[in-house]
Length: 106
Figure: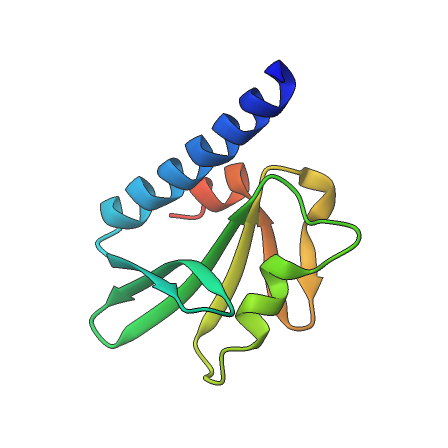
């Protein structure tokens, strides 16, 4: 369907923007994937490591984006970047930030 293709494409565009911005900020960027979960971006700069999930909006019936980050058993910064301004805040200690606000941080 036309609407689904647009939304899916928009989601990929947001991921591309985040990826390029992380590179611009000087991070080495990887993807962490295993059979149970996928972390969109693992950003490394020196000894600093940050994890990022990118989503159009947080799902109401599942916290897959946040759950993948919660399963990580380290204390590195974890952030969900969303295109939905209404989703921003904090979920179980994980920051949820609107993409425009995140882009303007640095």
